[in-house]
Amino acid sequence: MRSSAVADFVVIHIDGILDATTREQFSDHLDAVADDHGPDMILDLGGVTFMDSRALGLIVHHWQRATAAGGHFALVNVQYPASKVMWVTGLAQRLPMFETVDEAVAAV
Image 1: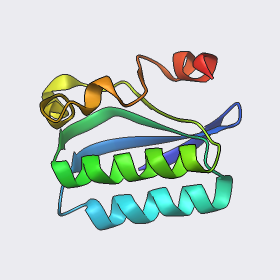
Image 2: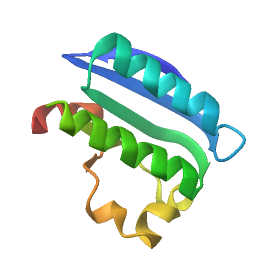
Image 3: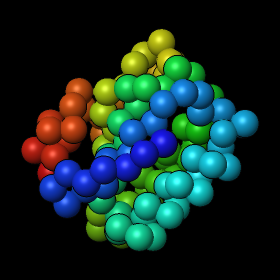
């Protein structure tokens, strides 16, 4: 995981597997970014090769946390094969998803 700044957002680029083995690292990173930079966050999931329901639950938690704080949250570059759990649960229709970071920033 690495982070960069675009406009008023922190973009978190994630590569690899998001599951029970990486959940704590993922959670700690998202918490640190939110604490240090505020609620406006974009997750770039283009490098994710697999995501389980625990990771999705963590994403939903941070989406709710950001919106409750008056911030903006978006997912970009979501790849269906690696993130099927979003569609199986119906959250793909609820979570704010965009093709690119520029599209997510422009939508705010």
